Amino acid sequence: MGIATKHCLHSPHIIHPSNTFNDRNENLDLIQATKANREDLVTSIINSDPSQTFKADSQGRTALHWATEYGYSRIAHHILSVQSRDRVTCDSGTSAVSLLDAQDERGQTALHVACNMRRENLASLYISLKTSVNISDRSGNTALHRAVRMNLETIALMLCELGADVNAVNELLWTPLHEAARTGNENIMAELIRRGSKLDAMTQNSMTPFLTAFFYYKIASRGSAYLNLESVWKTLIDAGCKLSQTDGHWTPLTAALACDSSFIAALLLFNGCHVDKSGRWGRGILQDAFSCSEPMIVKLLVLLGYIPTPDDLSHCCKQIPMYSRVFTRLRGFGSSLHKDRQEVVRWLRERREAPPSLGEWCRVSIRAAMNSASGDRPILANFKFLPIPVKLQKFLAMSDFTHYLVDG
Figure 1 (cartoon, one colour):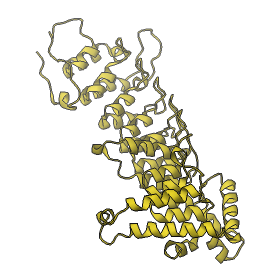
Figure 2: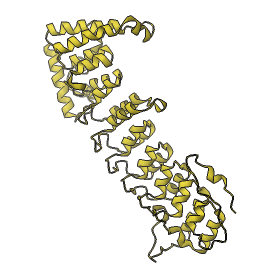
Figure 3: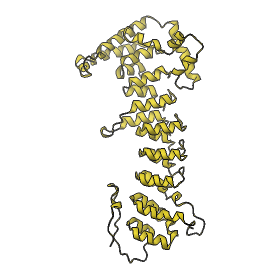
Figure 4: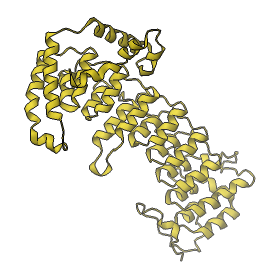
């Protein structure tokens, strides 16, 4: 009777099959021996009948699939040793494909399984043996999709180095970059972007990587908090993603406001994103900005072309009492939130009395034209190339915006 080895204990989430059976069972095959973690029998069977390495069970799985599933590294090495010999033939007698490329009924290779089960040692072994890295399973997922989804950074980087398609799409049109945005792994994102990943690829639900990060941030549980959302967003903006691409419900700007991210909202606005006329629930986006972000975002919206309505002003006035002195003290010692919001309301009233200057209208028009010419991509770095005086370049780039922060 066999005894379970330490290889059975690799994952606490898997119930390994019993490795106790009658050794005199003449019908025992390679898959059974592998599941039972009987290294001695695996070696014996391979030596007597190497073609069994290609034998598949009812799930289309070979012994290598099962060795990978359970993390039996030594058995996987024994099975793969057959590949160093003369080519083995399948039961049909035809020339066999690489064992590493054999797919089960779900289309998964051993590398897919290694990534799914977080078997990094086996995944790196298969990659080093030059397995085909762009094979898709039945759902269209490549090994790179699975490695990124499981946050296997080293494996993902190895796959990229070996030529994995960074723009491969699965049946839901997810790319590896969508998966990286979902997990928030900035190192993987940076490598995918460096290798030409499409920043604005859209899923079946019309979500870009930017909005994918937003969605998974919003649904993340307290125990798995998505702590680096702003950093992920900044990575995408700096790389040149579209600034106003919508899924029909959200834009990057409204998503940033919904997450109280004044930094990203300001970055989007400075870089030339479209200034939406409406926010959530059909109300003006200025109302969302006043409720969810720093007061300066409200001023920035107005200076970039948003015209406040009477409803906007009324909403802002009603919001002021919500920010009591107790609340502002909870924000931290010396917080000026309450005072700043009062100042913004006063500034909005003044703006309603005095129309924008011709210079401001020209700035809005020129920035909109630059946004269109850039394909809705960041324009902040482009102002210095304009054949105009530096003072005008700074004016268009909103370098004078600090003048409005306090004084109005």
